[in-house]
Structure formats: C-alpha cells, structure tokens
Length: 286
Image (cartoon, rainbow, N blue to C red):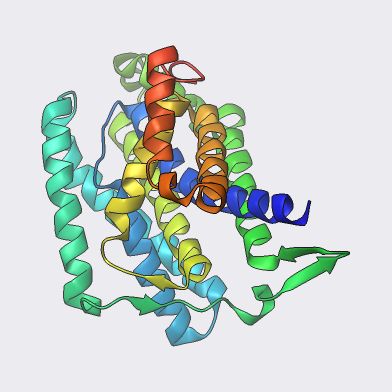
C-alpha cells in the first residue's frame, strides 16, 4: 500500500509538471491554431532563469516569479517576431519554431555554460510527512497543488472573465471582434504570453524536483507535452490535464515494475489511443 501510494504521488507530480507545459501548448493551439515546437525551449528557459534567480536571491518565490516573467517576455517576442508572419501555415510554423527551439537551447549554453546546474529544494518544501508507514514528500504535494491551481485559474479566466469571452469570440470570428473595436492581435499575444508563462512555471518547478537542469531538457519535455496533447485531444484544455496525469502515472509505475518499458510506454500509449480514437480521448477543442 505504501509503495502504491508513493508511486501514485510521484506519477501525479510528474503529470502536473507535464501538464503545465502541455496546457500552454494546448491553449495556444486550441485558441490560436498555432503549432509551437519551441514551447519546450520556454520550459527550459523558465528552469534556468528561475533557478538562477533563486540561487542569487535565496528566495524560491522570487525565482518562480522571475521564471514566469521570463516566459511572458519570451512569449511576446516569439509571438510578435516569429509566429505572426506564419499564422495559418502549419508547415512553416513547425519549421520556424523547431529552429527557434534549437536557438533557445544553444543560448542557454552560451549564458550558463554547457554543464548541468544543480537545483536545490527550498528548505520549507524539503523533507516529508509521515502518516503511519506512508511517507508523503512535501515538494511533490506542492507541485500537484500548483498544477491544480493553475488549471482552475485558467478555466476561470476563459469561462468567467471578460478577457476570456473576448478570446473565445476571437477564435470563433476574428473579423467580428475586430469590428467591435477590439485589437485581436493583442488578445492573441495575451494568450501566447499566458501559455509561455505556464511553460516557464513548469520549468522552474521541475528544477528542485529532479535536482538538476540541463539545456536539453526542453526537447525532452516538449516530446512528452506533444504526446499529452495528442492523447488528450488537440486543443482540448481539460483533456490535457487528464492525459498528463495518465502519462505521469504510467511512467511512474512502469519505471518501477517494468523499467525496460519506461521510456517506450508513452509512445505506446499514444499509439493505442490513436488507433482506438484518432481524435484523442477527449475529442477536439474544449
């Protein structure tokens, strides 16, 4: 029972980290119809900038805020200078964002060096709670709580606020929204900025979770994020959180029981879903 609980907790924490990256990707595709393969680079930049700020200031909270702001800034630059010229062309989006992904990864090496960096867990989140024979690691619970709060916050933003209404209306009929005097370009930039900030948040939270960060982590997690997006349904925000949890749990249990399949299980899971339900477990956009 203790083993099952720990594997589940570990899987949920990993799933939430993947969700923060995949949700931003889903949000950008679902609302803007943009395939951003550079999203993993924003994840890595969030990790490096946040951990560096955390190490410099000694405050993990300031590091998190710094990482999110880094994501916002990179998101604005990416949307304005990289994405805007290729709106509506998925092939060009894939090619140009893949190139940007490589550039972002190499820039990390230029600024922080090619070696991996250590990321320590803040003292107030380190350690664990013991309930009987069950050990609950504090930082993993923290990640799960943050992931759930982000999910609830974005759902509230899209469903209950004026900006969310404008965003959804802009997706359905861009010309009508512009006719009402709303700058749809600024609205889409806001969506891209939010998605990028979520990716950066996932990156800085991943640092203490793994203990180290490296420049190639963006590509590794970008692959997991796209697997989650495909499994959940392209553009389905609710589906992304369910798929991320499924991927996290399957990876956690496979790594313990059948370690030989731990790397292949996600690809296998995606293949099964595509065969059974090509549109994803939760259908299309939603």
